[in-house]
Length: 143
Image (cartoon, rainbow, N blue to C red; front, side, top):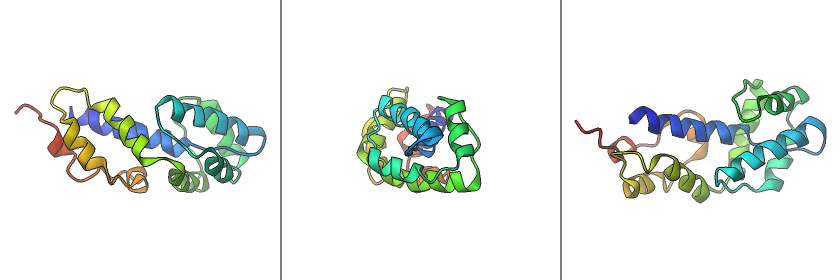
């Protein structure tokens, strides 16, 4: 169960870290693909914000995102840094709702506790791999 929660948080982080957009070429294709992916997950993104930041993606990073589709990819250090900036384009409430939807119906998960722990979620910390304090207390492992 704990692994499922951590995996879901990691998946959300990867989705967010991939978000981007741009003015033309590969950057535009990456923006279209990833903004749609976030929207499909119920995460609201300021499209203009994401597109402005994605204009800074290198062609190579944008092409990697497009080639990966819904999968994961390894970006350059510059691309990774931009993904952290792009987290500022995400509506936190919709991110929290998406996380709760993904993991809240698992046996032993207290949705109210989870919502309380995630209400002040720092997406940059999440992107850095930090699991929010208190999340483990929201899970009854049955033992």
